[in-house]
Image (cartoon, rainbow, N blue to C red; front, side, top):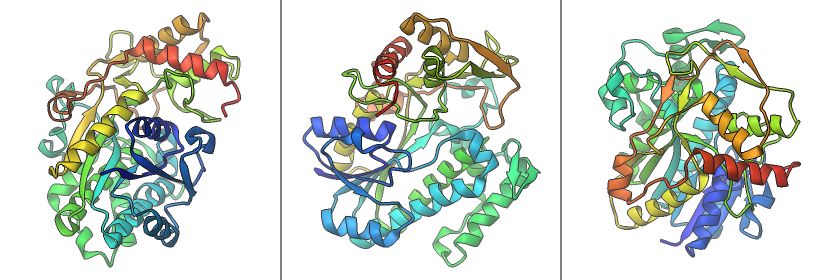
Length: 382
């Protein structure tokens, strides 16, 4: 299996994965709308500028290149924005994903690697939930949705009411797709995420189970934890003009691009009062994708894996790592907690280690050093 189509491949994680695949002699084609991606990030790799919303154009790309497998990175991922504009996230992260799956079904492309997220886990219900195990979403059965406050058609909304609006919109959008029926068991797992972003990814995982059972499309879902860092060779990095990730915001402050960075909540029940995340380098993720292609080529079953280091770092520890890498003091300002953010999120990566023979090798200081190197040398991005 060598012919790989990478959707969203001109974006941050996608471009790192494209580089790793080419290093391993895969024949790669990138499909990207360039809404958030950059053609410079993929160099001379074959690039088709197409939006997944245009199903007919996507079909043309499949018929032209006949990919054996797809790696899908095409999604919006800003948690805060998802709570204020949930329909935008539904249309891009769910509707467009169904377009991709349907084209795969029609062209008999049978393998998919899907970028998912730790946001499907929500908040822990007890201390033993952390680090997160993949099985949590099938074991935990909440009676009400954990969705935090957001907006639906300019109406303030929260929890189960928010959830029912969103799931109703899903059902309305696919009212003719009887194969998309959501049962009681599915509702439990969909209630777990705190954010609409996380819910769209949980819906994508649900859809993959349907396309596996009904249409034979085998998939591996990779639940990324918080990605930061840049290519160690300094060729590519997180090239967003308006970044949302903590490490890049800290670097932007160090470079004088923004006056301060916002710390959303210092009242969490953690050692320093700030939220804790498991941070992972994009090169580690890229290596995992190459390993998954080998796994799928062996005819293995569909699976779900966490990709993280298994270690948690607080907001203040990330800022400290950037200060160490840059040699500059980061200016911060405190704000209330942000809707959609979990208190703590750390991966249990043992399943990926055992089955994929994969383990993260970059630590938080490595991430800060590589990110600082790239951003300080590329202040105007590409």
